[in-house]
Image (cartoon, rainbow, N blue to C red):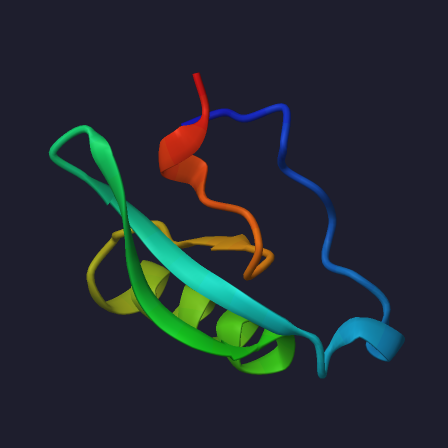
Length: 68
């Protein structure tokens, strides 16, 4: 999925910020974990290697299911 919301990996100063990890299934975003950004980045790469499933990381106050 190509998204205009995609951004590069942030600087070290943001690695301890809380985020929500989502995956896309059955036409909806499914939250799977609340964690620190550093852990979310690690999970992202693990998911790509093990299941070929792409995870998306969002700030905790943003619900991607409410996008039009």
